[in-house]
Length: 182
Image 1 (cartoon, rainbow, N blue to C red):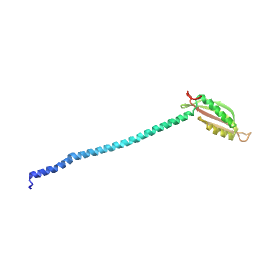
Image 2: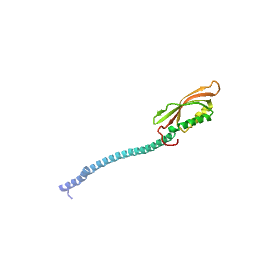
Image 3: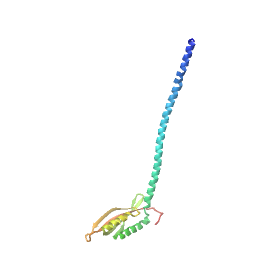
Image 4: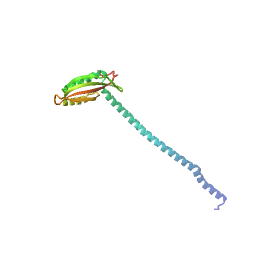
């Protein structure tokens, strides 16, 4: 077989077809594929961050619900302004059960404490120190929210182990409370 110009041109065209198809078809397609892979990778990263945010959102919703339940439990310990007298009677009963003498109870001006009110009660109590300590432990076990912002303990000079206490007992309550037991 003889190679003439026609055969050489045919051979060159035959070799030029794969080179041209690589240059004009496969190379641009590879660039598009690489670009698509980069976009897919970026979108996967965005999806992962969205999944994390969504998981946090459900965790936050659950946490918000837990906080709301805790607030409800605390608010259940707040009496209405009608129940403050009941709590005062409970405190007097605790003092009597611990053999303490409740010399004086004086109601002071109510203090607004954010959404709730605080009713300070000045009290003078006397009795044995051990019994007073038991009184404080019983007071701590009350279902209601109370605090002792100040307390002054004076040792009796007449009797050994006897003290006189001047203290302020603050009772927190809901001022606008309309429902519940009274």
